[in-house]
Image 1 (cartoon, chains in turn cyan, blue, orange, brown):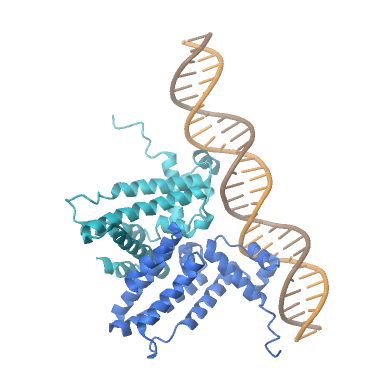
Image 2 (cartoon, chains in turn yellow, brown, orange, red; image 1 turned 90 degrees about the vertical axis):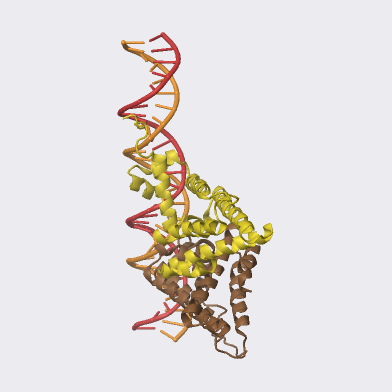
Length: 187
Length: 187
DNA sequence: TTTTATCTACCTAGTGATAGATAGGTAAAA
DNA sequence: TTTTACCTATCTATCACTAGGTAGATAAAA
């Protein structure tokens, strides 16, 4: 009774972002439309513009939310109670879950491919996301392999490339096994 | 004088494919148009449809030509006169040239990202290209590391993932250095 | 307690631009 | 005379985006 009768399931802004994220991940920035989103959640496209004036605004909101949720999932790399190996595997598993189980490429890979079409603001949100991943992985490699910062950052880039490239392979061939094969170097 | 006066510089079909390939690589399948291509080469969009009835036909032609040219550049993996290490480096350098110097992602990465939008025929041409790369790399790794076929194919997938992932990193960050960093594992 | 004003979240109806694709014509080459 | 390679002109669909309106909630003023 007292349990938040003010919260009507999910608010419209959230439902719009959910739909947009799914559409971008599936078809890219150029191929998702306000009309499709509106239809999916049962309002008119003009009402989507009410919440997010432009397509760029919506994409930035999606990307920002994604980055925040992602950051929240990452443990502190310095946390002594977690083995850095386990952190790495957790990171890889998280990526795998997104691309293999949902059967598409990651949000950031899709937006990167469409970078020439993006408003600058979306490009910035995208760059920030890569920086979050790179700096977290760098810290983990520093701990795991006793490396200097710049050396660890190179390794972070290598792993990140393997992950993104694995998603390309999976998508292109339709064979999900390629993910584990491509990542077996790191496990 | 006798040098092919039949070949008037470049025929229209070729110029259309050149323009389409550049456009796909730069902006993806969804964001290249018959109108843009027509304007670029100085004819009308209806005339592009004369040569390639549908967008899918044009994309298949581009992808097929790309695969053929690519295949022609690859040396026979069994050729004793070439060190397999050198073959690998040549492969990586070829990829690097495409994505770093031309400053965009590869044709196949772009089309893979847009796979949900592609006519089936384009998807098939794309899959064939990946198979060409994978089987060539597999043969090279068999020779280089004395591996069984299936083990070598896993390594081929790992390298291919690194390459494609590196192009994503370069595109996302704008820092071309990421290519060599991500590939340093393999050189 | 009623009125007035404001805000939220949607709507209808439309803009101009652009997309892929087609019908039908023309002029030159084979 | 048929084919080739282009053209003009147009079709229908869809795009992002906007103007202007409305029902309902909230809240301050009378």
